[in-house]
Length: 625
Image (cartoon, rainbow, N blue to C red; front, side):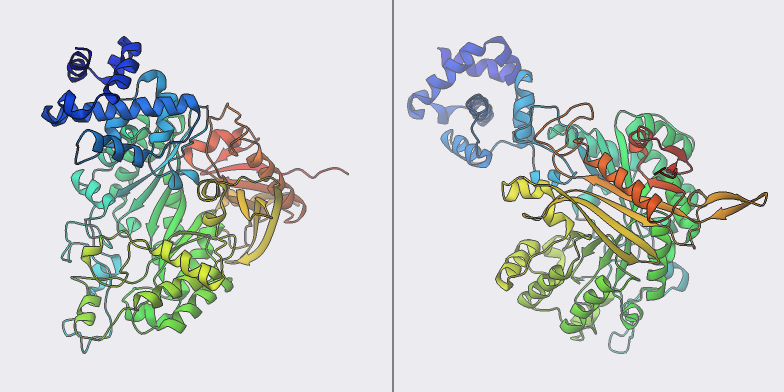
């Protein structure tokens, strides 16, 4: 009688409501159910919906018990065992488990139910399995602008799709766009990537894309307190200005809930919003990183650029119909860093007419040549996609991809060259494998590459590999001795200083800061001091800029102090103090600026900075002896 009355109640009310009404009965029922054979209870005769409710209830009960006993639980194994016990062919969805958690246990259980802790550890979807504080999260929301042609194709008409592939000298490797087999998708995408499908469902409306993604993440248990946008899909800055303003305005409005009439109004309300926009990343091309484009992106609240480089060889840029020169790449890097942007480059090994040795040499050139040396890197091995010019070359036998083992070995050797101030964001495109005619054959390329590096006795020392959150998850180690490490290098016409709090013995990164002494060619007036000489005002270029400040590890609320977490432990303030000292005493700068996301400006106000244009700035005073 207890058993069937309990299941009937579950069919009418949620598990959380039932748990509040009869907590003691719920505990007795679970013990009672597990002690009686399924055949005696008649479980197979129950509807599948009731069996799923019972499965969810037992999983939640076991998780609550595990929390009380302070022991870890393998959630996937638990779901499989309980689903099998009730004769279910499928396991309960994560969304259903989260919805069934009683309100009084959400604080303890939600961190255990959240997905992808690896992505969360470095500031993306931050979660903690042990924290007793409310989790403050930063989620990355990728949005896509409407499909459009590449600007150089729209201007010249050369699509890189050879009428006669045998006689053609140029080709294109990009799928997507109005002229491709994937005309419903934006340039460089097929429409079957997760971000593309969300954008297509929203008809490329930026407001709907943002709101739907936030709601989806909240259903998975993520509190979207801080948001970082990535604007994807072709060359955003080549679109008409009114469309760009509409797009960015709606991104900010989706967070603040305000209906703005201009970008400036949207940014103002976004700064005061409960959900903060901590940064915007825009994908673009070197020829759309000129001064006017950079000024517009600063107005939008953009802090990071992803620039398509693909190759450092001039002949390859010509053959692949890039529409710009390698010199344009170097100039765009210089201008972008002088404006304070973080620069991430897209590189493509395995392009035609290059070869394995030349591919490896170009990455060595990229990391060693001061004209390149970006802050981040995305390595996208060439893929042959139906409907592109490269596909026609492959079909005619003029192009063949590297064998899988050769590609893995190449990427492994590339990662061994990466300097410690560079972050490798991705090493593989998010294109579904069934759409790939030739190229990468494995969906877990990074894992295979790291295994190959271990065989070679090499290691990757990029930022992502060394950051404390990743180390906590994979190695279950925590830093026990932290030191301030300084690395200086010259890049893109300026003096770069990479400051980091690290555990040098275990090679673990806690937090970092990028400081740049602006070059004399700095074009932003905010980054030039006004000096009065002989009664006349003169522009003094002696200014330094903080291009990035990031403390890794699981986040806690700003007002909280968790001794097991590294964010808000004071590392950010210590890094800023050292940056100000270097700018004043070594750079000889009279002023220091910070490029910050719209939602993080108040943090710098507490450090004495004031808003000047798109930057937070502070005058440096000489320290008296």
